[in-house]
Length: 255
Image (cartoon, rainbow, N blue to C red; front, side, top):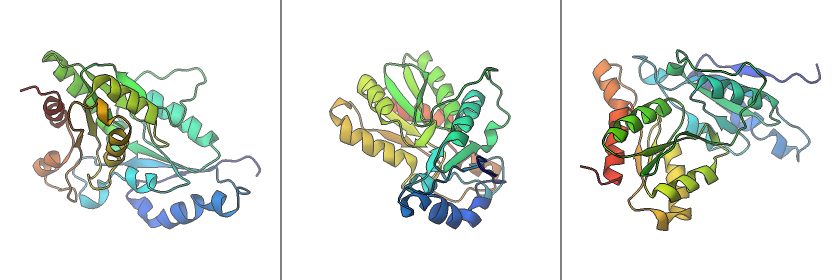
């Protein structure tokens, strides 16, 4: 039927690896290969990232996988309100959107407007203003960053928390304006460090506002290993508030 816009639900993004050819070689490229004649207004959504003791094959954050591909938009909300607003925008978008929902965020509660609204794709959000350092994060690391910012405030360090909300397109202006204002930056992400989302953010910062930096940009990510099943090792491999606090203190020269 004309006008229908499909929303494909993955049980988890780990299982979506079995459909990655259709997403990357078909959906992402159809508009380009047809010279703009064929649009693909489709949303691929589902839970991703680590939960609790699901092991190496079911605990992966794939934002950087899909953000690497021209033709795909990648969205990763952190709050109920953003999840609703961004999903409505994704469905209305004329291009394929990869909508990644943090698995451990499904239990989160928050205010959601009852009136009609959309959250624009490609616009980051300042979840907490600050002056001493910028913490850039998305999805599950937003909660850890906010907790870290609260702890840092108790020691006199006011950290600004920027929730990317959208990985591609990236809100470069929001990132650069914040870092130019605070002069220090930590990037937190759930995924692996090599070629991760944080690497792209750091590249942007060093190219555009290098002279504003008073310290190197630090990254806090998941450990560069398959996720352990053991509970203590799994905890050690994940990003948490304590790791973000330690990184911010390093860039802010706080003992």
